[in-house]
Each structure stands twice: as structure tokens, then as C-alpha cells.
Image 1 (tube, rainbow, N blue to C red):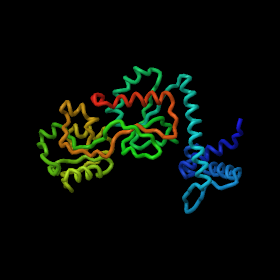
Image 2 (spheres, rainbow, N blue to C red):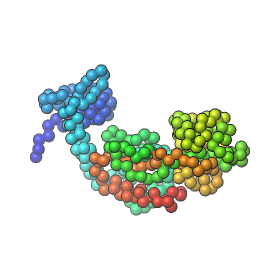
Image 3 (tube, rainbow, N blue to C red):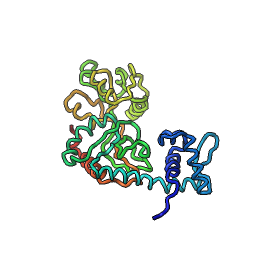
Image 4 (tube, rainbow, N blue to C red):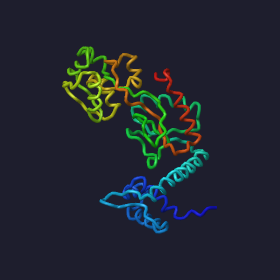
Length: 297
């Protein structure tokens, strides 16, 4: 069998090379930054060449270091997956899926009974985040993310359109009247997510330009934004696909046909990652959920 020297130092190097920051690597490895630095020195002494360049408080990989890191990252990921598979085969069959909270509550969670009916031994753990998961550190098996599908290191499979268009409650329309054109939104409170960029983009696309609205409200959680418009507090940019039930029931109203269609929802995982049987089962199942009929709740 091949001799594998300095496995702890190699693992430390893989994590440090991922972050390019010894402090962050130490937090992930649960050791001190000096312990990370020591392991890197041990490995450099053994190899006979430098792995990192330290300059102006920045850390970059040397040419040799970058080559070694590219060669090691995949195998270490495969080791982690092999251990995970072994645990799964001994009865601990669970998948950790990272996704946005609103997509989870509005679309995925109601469908999980279907998955469990077909795969009763596979447990699903949902981790809620609005960020693209870091598969190196977040202990995530698969992610469902909102974006353009252009992540270079990720396999991205289209799931749902993420179109955004103005939506409000029927009660607000009864109270204020329905806007006849986008410029009429100046009489309404606009509800934003983290910033006003999405509304700015939609207003520009609609031809309304720079509309001075009655008021602006920023709410960074989609579930809270939806509850806000249900309460008649304003107009948000929402996804008709995920709000189909509320729209069909008449509680919510889509004001215009103009949509921002830049982003969609994708199932993602690293291209270098070899899927386990349970992951493949989930991937195949969720792709079957995205036909037109499955959009209803």
C-alpha cells in the first residue's frame, strides 16, 4: 500500500488553501492559527518548497501550492463522502439540503411526504440560508440556490423560474384601486429585500424609470415580506410560481405581466463531487417535481 505521510498537515493545507486565511482555517479545524501555521511549515519542510506566499497581509498559493491543492481537494472530499456513505449504510441515511427559507416553506417542504413515501429510509435535514453553500465547510450534501446558474465549480440543474413581478393583496387593491401602469406605483409602499436594486431593475425594465414612491420598506426575509403584503402593507416583487396558491385563491394579485427573469432556482453540487446513491435518489426525485403540474401546492 502507498505510504501516506503527514495526513494531518495535508488536511490542514487543504482547508487553509480553500480559505487562503489561517485564522478562518483554524476556526474550521478547531485549532489555533499558530497550529495551522505549524502544520504548514512541517509540510513545506517535508516537500522542500513553499506552499503559500505571504505579502501585505494577504495569502496566496504558490504555483506548486496551487497544483498540490488542486490535486488534494478532490481526494479529501471523496474520503469525507466515503465515511458518510459508510454511516449511511449502517442506518444513518440522511441528506442535508441547504436552501432559502421561503422556497423551503412554499415549495419543497409540502412535497417531502412524496419523497419519504418512496424512500422511507432516507432522512432529509433542511438548512436554511440565502447564500450559496460552501460545500467544503458547511456539511451540506446538496443546495438549492437562486441565481443565474453560472457557478463555474458547480453542477447546476434548473428547477424553477425565479421571475419577480409586483404582487400585493386583494384587500389593498380594494382600498387604493389597481394601478393601471407601473408609474402608478408611486401611490404605494414598495417592500424591498436586502436593498432596492431589484425594484430599481424592475421599474427600469417596465419603462417607469425612477419612480418616487409613497414609502419604502426593507424586509430581508421573504416569508415576512409575503406576510406583510397579505396584511395590506404594500407591494413586493414576488415569484408567481411560488405564490401560485395565494394568487389562485385571490388573496394576492399579480399587478403586471412584466417580470424580471434574470434569476432562477437551481439544484447545485460541486462538479468534483461523486454523488452517493441517496443523493442521486434525491436529485432524480426533485427533478421530477418541476413539471408544470407540480407548481401547485
